[in-house]
Length: 208
Image (cartoon, rainbow, N blue to C red):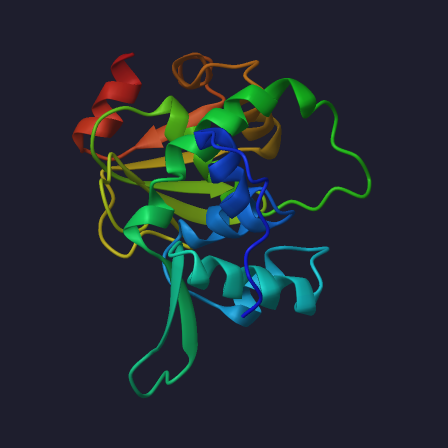
């Protein structure tokens, strides 16, 4: 593989940007926070990225120890990409970047793509504790692993096991939370989010 480009600056921020400063890299990390993903799934959930650029970024991430590629056992037998422990350490970086970028969201533009699970990280920032939360939005369902220290932090579709809480909200409410305009407990109190479930997380949300 060609050598990694570098700013050649003895600075930790510059060294970090050597690894993740290229266009699309951090968004690939966002997608891989859902766990192992096939190339075709990544390409579908990164609208606008070319196949050449996606392949190049994934190779760079493998080289730099941020992601690995492996073949699933039969009957799947497909190759998947997943974050290494080093790659998963970028979660708080993405969360800080997302919080900083709230003011840039504004109104959704006609050209803006959206996926249900793109609301996962803003909701994770608003939740405390540990457990599985299932979320139902107009765009689809996803689930969150609140407080998870390793493994996926979210996933598409309903939770694979009985969740500690289920949240039902519309896109406008999810957008307001993502923009930092609406706090999660306020949305629950105002009836904009319906909370069901008997787990600790559900009880905490209803009592907040």
